[in-house]
Image (cartoon, rainbow, N blue to C red; front, side, top):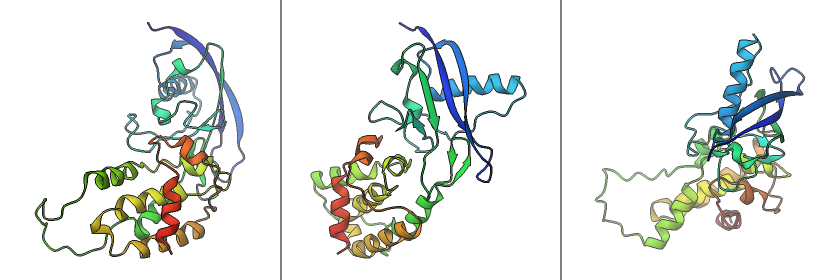
Length: 245
């Protein structure tokens, strides 16, 4: 049964990367617990626009947890307290009436802030462009059954392919490492025979570029695994390092 609750939102507001920022406090009264947190931000923005004030900027797209567009810290935790979900799947029923929610952007040098809760994650795009693909010339499309691949092998590759590149792993790592993201991108290709020929080159290049882009080294505290909305195992980071040897 649906019920209503009131929340205090403490949101980081910063007009641009060159301006100073600060937390601003807003109150939402008697809103449905069935709303997602992003829908609650929509309600807040409607109020701000009606008052001729600048709305809160935040990234979003599919709102179904599959695109990786949304993402910010909720009370210091990437995507909020619910495991295995993105922030767009976080519903207000996870909180109690009268709670205060602190919302702030990903904090990482490789993710420069654009405005409010929005950061520039194009460093991930550059990582993919550097080697997150197979470059083998296969000619015309082969028959689907020409190359047999075991069920367990396919399932393992698909597990890592579910990474949506949201950046939560980076935001949660004390060193702002992109190791889990890169490991996932390497593992979903490197486990399949089509990706074997240039797997070591890809692994080496992506790890080099991580450092060039300003990401830190793996801190081994496994927070990346804990906050990943697709629950990708940090064991793949060890796999990645073995691949680069």
